[in-house]
Amino acid sequence: MNYPGHFKLAALSSIAQFIYTTLFGWFAVFILLRTGSVWAAVVVHTYCNFMGAPNLTIDGPRWVTLTYWVSLMSGAWGFYRLLWKMTESPNALAMFT
Image (cartoon, rainbow, N blue to C red):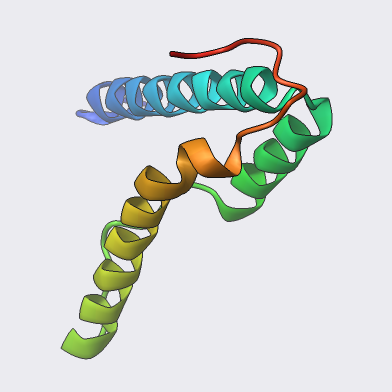
C-alpha cells in the first residue's frame, strides 16, 4: 500500500515530539538540581504525562477559544514569574547565578 504524504507527517510528528520531550527533560533536570528532590521531578513528570501537550486548535464558540488562550498565556506568564521562587531550596544540588 502507498500512503502519499504520510512519511512527511510522521517525520514532522517525530521531530515535534523529540523537541517537546527534550525540553521537558531539561526542565525535569532543572527541577531536580534546583530543589534537590527526586520527588519534585517525579511529580512534575507525572503531571506532564497526565496533562500532555496543550491543544493549540480549539474549536467552539469564540468565547471558549478566547478563554482557553487567555488561560494558556496566563499560565505561561505565571510559570515565567514564579519558576525561580517556587524552586528555591536549601537542598539544591546546584547553584545558578
